[in-house]
Length: 368
Image (cartoon, rainbow, N blue to C red; front, side):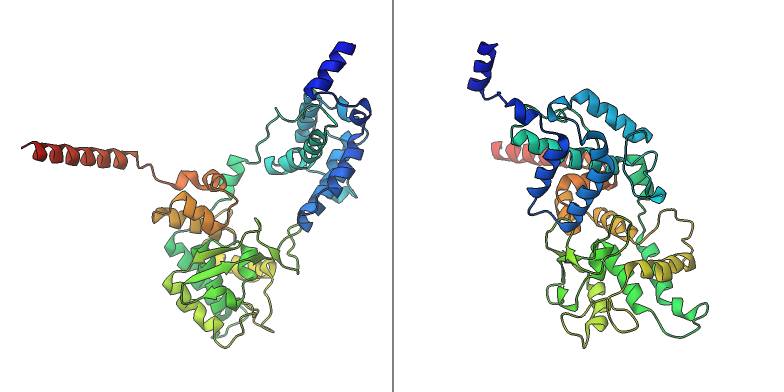
């Protein structure tokens, strides 16, 4: 035994039994205090998931007793709605089967964050979560949620939104040019809804035909839009090209306004528009007026997907599309849209054939 202890000390595998005896809850508290550069929205999510799902199962468990088998059983229980939880009120009870994305947030991000921190601090010898892999993607669900409009459908939707005031109870000649511009802007830049409604007049560079996307209107866990603005989802600032026709449509909205004024302003007061109200009062009604009410899953976010499909159709490569859409890396772009890139292997083969024939001909000419 003394020899084994000596070997562990020399190899760096030795861990004080007192450290291993820490409870998960103790480790979780220290993990949370170590996160100094985490966004407020992420911090709140960590706290919510720790309180509701993670601590009810692992709070009093000693770190050294957490093993791969017990984690796998917990995941099964989470999927089947049998895992312990601590929600406030019946209306907040968990769904029977969480989505893959939500399950990933519980297990990999929150529970995993504590375990990775404990491993780095050498409170445990190895992380039992290392060999457990959960996908955050649900292909069938995500595919069903993606709607890609054609250029003609975008125009029909924008035109319907523009003429909504002349229909129903309004019965006026007024045109909703702002809503029409929002639809076209979203479909031809790929901006997220929160980014679109947070734009200022000064974010549009008319000379270089670029829009600077640097902030967004975040949502809480219930999908409500917050009043305060924050950085983009990835925290990165990006510049996205603007088609000429879009510049022409935005110029009247910019004329006479200060750079700090909102680009897409409310009809009354000229302040920031509420994305939720706009969706209910304009987008959904325009969808119906345009004859698109039967398009399951069509929502404002679909315009972002539409941009991806239109850009790919016009030859945009994955790297440039990833940058334009503000993805954290190209793998996210591929995961979302890989099926939209055409199979060009036959074209590649024809080009290789032509290139070789040209090279052989040049060699033949040199030998003559």
